[in-house]
Length: 403
Image (tube, rainbow, N blue to C red; front, side, top):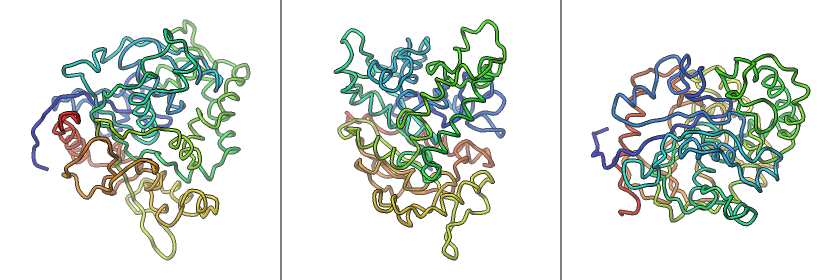
């Protein structure tokens, strides 16, 4: 790709997926989420002159809760999950306090806007964050005293330059849908039970589950005596979490729940930001089956078999499930990675289109599996080059309000 003129130097924020981690977790210094064992994408991009961040948000939290955390991480202050929201779903209203990495975000200057990129469940995080910034929350505005309302819920903040999902679970995945509510609840109990037992130990320095708002752990910064805890007294918080249809990450990856959540959003029409869906497929059709390609990682091969066997009549009747849903990156169906199906979108034909703000672009499907965006089994220089091109594209896009 030819070099493009840089029209801005806006920072880029990289958001990890379900069970992922960021720069506040020591694990990221050993096995970089963005680069894995092969390299450090954040360092590489900084060496190229880009301002980039990869914060840690709740690896088990919903798109809404992660958005609230991301806002506080960027602007500084105490996380406010919303008075109405926290009461509805049964967790603490306020969370951790952050110093702010972009306190001047939204003001004239180099931090007037940002680019956000989300991988996997980072996709629904990008959707929720974009929605709250632009439209706010009518429920929170109606149910919260004006002097208590978080600026995030006010809306009217056209502070995004670009928003990009990479194998985002934007419309759901049939893997999560097949698991269904009961298996998902069982997995929640098992996963969070294990997490509870170790989250109050030094383990949380390496990987922080961020589950203190559910009463499942103590905030790591406030722990003076890190030791193994009996998980049983904390299981009430686990049960509250598991009981939610929304505000539960395993449920929020199911196709019906994604459609429900997306249907409640006003969308981004009129926004001055640019919106992109990066999609991957490493399967092929053969003898009536959608099979994984040889270059798909083994873990994703196992998941792709679940995608392939699904022939749900309910999904077909209610959500338009057909053979186009069979191709996948191993974990997420290609239509699941696409723009929210209830929002305006265009299927992009190339990387060099004349992009317009306020509309989703489904970028051409690429030869990637779900782990490719993290650099797993990818050759490091092409991996770096790919993100160099993304950063170059973002910097070359004019501000939407200037068009």
